[in-house]
Amino acid sequence: MSLILCIETGTDICSVGIARDGELLALRESDQGRDHAKLVAVYVDELLRETGLKPDDLDAVAVGKGPGSYTGLRIGVSFAKGLCYGLNIPLVAVGSLEALAAVAIEDYEAGIISVEGWDEALLCPMVDARRMEVYAQIFDTQCREQAEVTAEVVTAESFAQWREGRKFVIFGNGAEKCCEMLPDATYINVVPSARGLARLAHQRLEAGAVEDIAYFEPFYLKDFVVIPSKKKLL
Image (cartoon, rainbow, N blue to C red):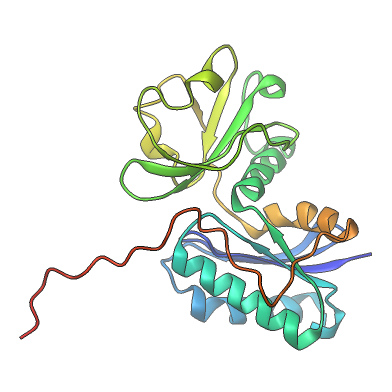
C-alpha cells in the first residue's frame, strides 16, 4: 500500500492531492494566478486535516517535474524535496506532460469528455511556453509515449506526421492558441492537475523508480533567460 502526496505547480494552476494506491483521496487546486509559494503548504495542511492523516503517514511525495514554468517548477520541487528530507521518504518525479495525458485519459474514462475514435487517437498535451511556442509530447490513449518532449513553435506543419490518418487530440494550457494553426486537430478542455500524478507515481514507487533528492532538478527543457528591463533607473 502506498500513500503519496502529489504536487503539480508547473503552470498557472497550483494543484495538490493525496492518493492511496494510485487512487485520489482528496484534492486542492487554484487557477487564480501564480501564488504557488503561498498555497502549496496551505493545501497540504488542509488535505491532511481532511483525510485525517499525519505527515508521518506519507510513503512518498510525487512532483510534476516539468517542463513548464521555471518559477512554478522550482516552488513545487523545492517544497517536495523539503518534505522528503524532513520525513525521510522518497521523491517520485513524473513528467508533467505525461501526467497531463493521464488526466485526459481519466476524464475520458469518467465520461467527462467525449472524443470520436478515441481508441485509435493520438494525444498531444501542450504546456504554454509563450507566444506560439509550446512544450509538447505525443502519447497513445494508453498513456504510452510515442515521441520525446519537444519545445515546438507551432505552425501549420507542426506534428504533420502524427496528424495524418489518425485523430490528433490537443489539450493543456498551450493548446487552445494552436487551434487555428492546426484546424484538423481535436481540442479538448483538459488542464494540468495533481490527480494526473496519482497512478503514475504509484507505479513508479512500486517499481523503485525514485529520485536522488540531493541532486534532482526540474526538467526545464530550455534554459531560463532573464530579460533586462527596458525601463531606465533614475
